[in-house]
Image (cartoon, rainbow, N blue to C red; front, side, top):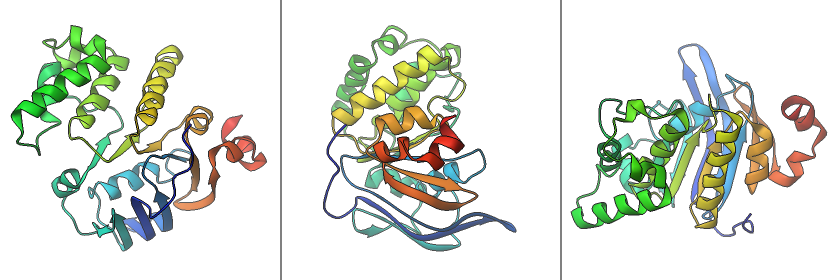
Length: 242
């Protein structure tokens, strides 16, 4: 785990509130991620974790508050602009183009880029990082196993060369052995300096890999601090760690 980063935050969420009709999904949220950190957001189903990531990616409208990335207000930005600025999301459920090849899915991840030679080089870098994908480069993405699809989803997001990687429930629906492998990938990305905001149902694994953590309950942040401290916090242990 890296030392906690200092300086101005790369991502800052201030007083963020989001409604779905009359339902308040997020209420007065304040959250920061600094360059080089892995920050995790934990909470029960329906707490607002995925909504937080979708708001950063500008997929859901903001009722009030401000989202700032590298000092720039992105609250009213379009999703494609957010990707160009350096934010990439790995969505819950992977969302592959099932009838397209592994290679086609990877190239799609670079859709905001025009540097053809560099895109080709990045494809090979992802194949080096995920050798199983290299073996299956011509295979249809829909025929991959769940773990392989999750690797492809991460590799596809990395093709945009993000400065911030948003991971939404990367362990969802995967066998325990595969989950450990996915978390080793996240750990290696952290070691390579990738900044990550991780939403994860498996609170124990998330807290073991993160620098800092936030607990979200019914749309409100209730606890935050160094991840190692939350691992031993009695409230967190009782609610999320069993």
